[in-house]
Image (cartoon, rainbow over all chains, first blue to last red; front, side):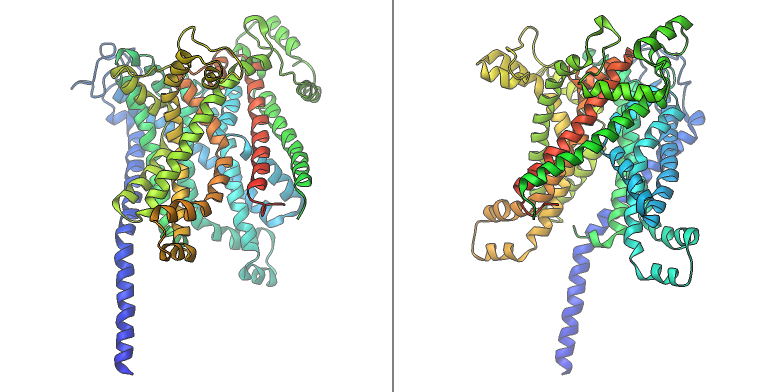
Length: 297
Length: 336
C-alpha cells in the first residue's frame, strides 16, 4: 500500500512540477508584457504632467532654423515653422491624455449606470436602450466620431465629447451582459429574499461583482481612444493650429516626406503608437493574468 | 428549423428598423449636436448669408419637418447637392469615389485574412516557443498600429529612399483603363490593358500592405486561440495516430474546424475595414471615399459630409445583412 501511495504522490508532484515548468516562462512573459505596458503609460503620463518643466523649448514659438534635422540642440529636429519637435511632442501628450482620460471617464460614467439599469430592470427600458446602443455600436467608431467632431468643432472638450458617444455602448454592453448573468446567481436571489431592492441591489450586490473586469476593459478602451483621437486630429478635426497635437503634427510633417525630411512626421506618429501599445499591452496582460479560464490559450 | 427563404426575408425585414435608427442618429448628430450653419460658415458670417444658407438647406423649418424632409429625400435616393463647385449631386460624387475604396478594401481584406491565418496556425503549432511569443506580440502590436504612421514609414522606405513604388494616387497619369466595374485591376484585365494593370498593381501594393497588416492582427489572435483549442481535441490525435502527414492534420482537419469563428470575425471586421480605409486613403491620397470625406470636411461641405456618412451607415447595414445570409449558407446550424 505504502509504496503505491508514495509513487502516486511522486507522480502527482511530478505532474505539478511539469505544469509549473510549462506555465512559468509563459506567465513570466505575461507579467513582462503587462509591466512594459504599465511603464510606457506611466512615462507618458509623467511627461504630460511635467511638460512645462521638462520641455526644452516653447512648443509654439520659433526657436531654430526651419526643418533642422535631429542634432544636439534639437534632439528630434525642428518642423516647417522652426519649432522644436521634442517640445511639441512633450506638450502634445497633454492633449492626447486629456482627451483620452476625459472621454473614458465620461463614457464610463454614462455607460455603466445605463448598463446596470438596463440589465437589472429589463423589460421595455432594456429593449429600447439595447436597440439604441446596438445601433450606435454598429456604426464604425471613427466615422461617428468624425460626424460629431465636424458638428462640435475643434477643442479638447469637443473631441472628448465625440469620443464619449462612440465608447458609451462598449461599457453599456459589457456591464449589461454581466448583470444579466449575475441576475441568475444564487446570492442575488438571496439578497432579493431578504428584501433588498432597487438601488441597494444594484450598487451593493451587482456593481461590486462587475468591478474586476473593469481595469481590462478600461485600458483596452484607452488604447482605442488614443488611436481615434490621433485619427481625428490627423484628419484636421482636433485642436486649432498652433496647439501641439500628435496626429495633426504628423499630418503637417507628411508633406515634407518626398524631400526625405522624415523627422517632423515620424516622431509624433511613433508616440501615438507607443501610447496605444502601452495601454493595450497593459490591458492584454491584465486580461490573461486576471482571467484564469483564458490562460493557456 | 425555418426554411432558408423565410430566414432571409425575416433578416431583411429586421434590417429596416436598423436603417431607420442609424439614419436618425446621423440626423441627430448633424442637426442637433451642433449648428449646421456655423459648421458651414465657420461662425462669423453676415446675417443675410446665414439666412440664404438656411433657406437653401431648409434649415429654417422646424426640426420635425427637417427630419421628415431628410427621410423623404433619402427614400428617393437623394443625398442632396454639394455646397461647392457646381453643386453636383452628392450621390453621383460618392459613386465616383466608391470603386476606389472597394478595390482597396477587397485586396486588403484578402491580405489580412491570409496573413492572419498563416501566422495564427504557425504560432499555434509552435505553442510556447519563442516564435509563438513573437507572433502573439505581433497580434498585439498590429492592433496598436496607427495607420498614417505605418503608411508613412512604408512610403519613406519603398517610395522615397528605394524608389520602387509610387506613394500616392491610384494609377499613373492618363493610364486609367476603360471603365467597366470601376475597379482598375479588374478593368485592366478585362480590357487586356497590360500597362494599366502593372501601374494599378504597383499603386495598390503599399496601401494594401498598410491596411492588410493593420487588420491582420485580430485574425492572427483568433486563429491561434482556436487552433490551440482544436489541436487538443481527440479527433486530431486520432488523425495523427492514423499516420496522416502533419500538414494534412493541421490545415485540413484542424483549420477547417477552427474556421467558423474566423468567418464570424470577417463579418465583424467590416467596420474596422471602413475606418482603416479612410485613414489609409488619406495617407496615400488614394482617391476613394476617405480622401473624399476628409477633403470635404476641410471645405465645410456640409451636405456632402452628411451624405457620405449616411452612405457609410447604409453600407454597414447592407454588409451585416449579407454576412448573416452567407453564414446560413455555410453553416446550416445557424438559423434563428
